Image (cartoon, rainbow, N blue to C red; front, side):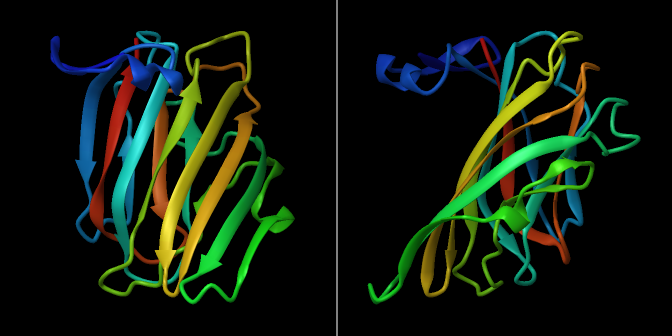
Length: 197
């Protein structure tokens, strides 16, 4: 598997292929700066069967949830019905408190609202969230739109590991994605979009 930017291979390692079906092709990057949301309204089309969004050191203004939604009309509306599942593992820095749990209140059953991807780091200066969202065949006009996501937040004094999966229940092509906090801003960090060749 190779990481390719503008047609030039910048990293090649066969071991990377275990997580994805082929080469990662860089499409675009958004950098947050007190941003209410981050939208990707171009670059998601029939060029690739899979798309991966990497979010790196997202820092929020308040203790809140990081979430996303899908659009079938280029970002005019983010309201795709989704059925999802959400579970997490957490561990306290002092080793005294840990768990692995399914959280039914954080999933959706044909809900059109934003799907939570991670519980919020509290906004302390050293706290952030990093992870990925993997979207499968968004341009299909036959199948629903499957996705999986995984992320980690250092939510003092905890490390919290989140697993989210589900599908957008639409056979219309999904062509835009929006990320936001449930309240407050994304103060810093980056989200990168790759196609899987």
